[in-house]
View 1: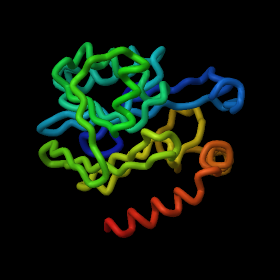
View 2 (view 1 turned 120 degrees about the vertical axis):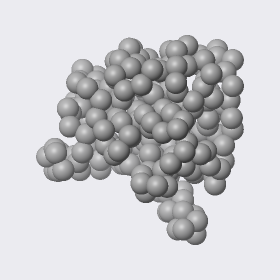
View 3 (view 1 turned 180 degrees about the vertical axis):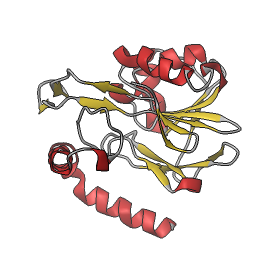
Length: 216
C-alpha cells in the first residue's frame, strides 16, 4: 500500500503487520494484527516522526522515497524507543547521515543501547520547539505513558498530536482514519489497549492532561 497524506505535506509512511498475533512476548494477544505508525513532514526542513519495527524498515523507506529523497531528512524524532517505534532508525540514518535524532534524555540511552549508534542526538524536553519552516514541532515529555522515555510531538500549525502509544490500539487495517473502519471494533481494541497497557498509569494520565491544559 502507498503512503497516505493525512494533512497537506504530512504523510503516514508506516507499515501494517497483518500477521503478528502477540505483543510484549505472549502477554498481549493481537488477533487483529497491528500497525506501526510513522509520519513524514515535508517543509523547508523535513522531519520523520517515529519509525517502524525493524523487519518493516524497507517498506517504510520505499514509502518515503516515493515522497522525498531520504537523504533530505533533517530530523528523526524518536517519541519512544520501544522497537516497534525505533526499530528502523538505524536504517534511516544510514540514508540520512546528516539528520539529527531528537528525543528525551531517557530516550537518548535507548538507541545507543539497542542499536549501537553513535548519532548526533539532541535532547528535548517539554516546551522545546524545532522550526521546520511553515510548521513548528513542539515536544511534550510523557514519562511512563507508557515507558520512561515517552514523549509526544505536537504540530502547532495543524493542531496535530503525534502521541506514539498514548491513544493507541493494536489493529491491522488498510485504512488510516477512524471513520473508515468499524467503530465497535476500533473501540474494542482501544479499550483493550488502555486496560492492558495504560490502566496502571491512570493517575499520571490525569496529571498530564492537567499539565497540558495549563500549557494552553
